[in-house]
Image (tube, rainbow, N blue to C red; front, side, top):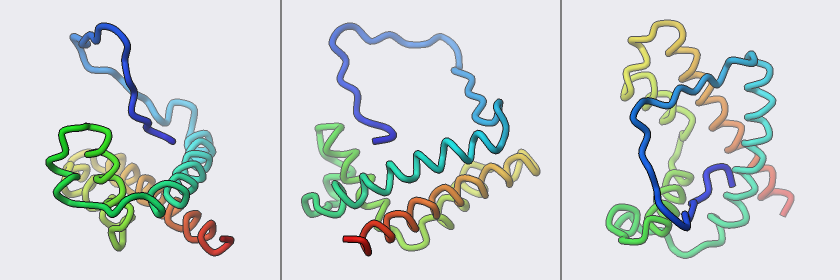
Length: 130
């Protein structure tokens, strides 16, 4: 799984500053290579866990006390959204105001939409293979 739920045994601290993350520091080819692998893992997760899991509930996605249950329902419902790549693009470019970042914001929103589409296509392929 790409973003598993982590259970910490001990104290949890907080950062006093923002954590800088540079996803393109090694170039666009490296980003695509990493996300090709991530999308394969995510597609396998969707087909093996989300597709066969309990009935998903919007109520649990919002109000479940257990964060793992809440997150599982949120992700499961998200995976069922029609036109998920477009939703991702609009969420980043309009919702998160990526348009204010100019070309960089547009390119990033497009790349994230492509990543979502890779997941959609790979999950469909896995389902067809049975």
